[in-house]
Image (cartoon, rainbow, N blue to C red; front, side):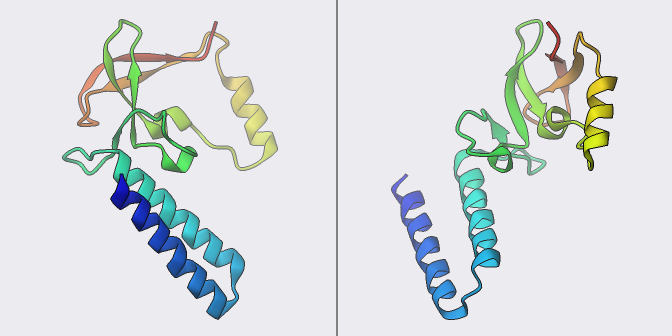
Length: 131
């Protein structure tokens, strides 16, 4: 953990010095945020043979820092992983699309696959939403 802290401090110092010399605040902020997210992801989560990060999202500080495969328990009690993209689902581009997506969802929820940590082998089902 000490190395992680020192790396973050070094990164912040370097970006601060770049900001002082260049004066471009917003793009530098975005670069720092992306770099910190990457440090967070790579320091917390192991990678499988396919290069996907996996683990609990309990320590994620934002959706960008969640692992590719999120630890979950299926409907039958099987522990496995959900693909982040399955959890995120279809992302609307407009408010009208958001309403259409919401209205198209079943009030009983829907099922998505539960994977082994390889991100390929389906080992169960996870139920999203509903009552």
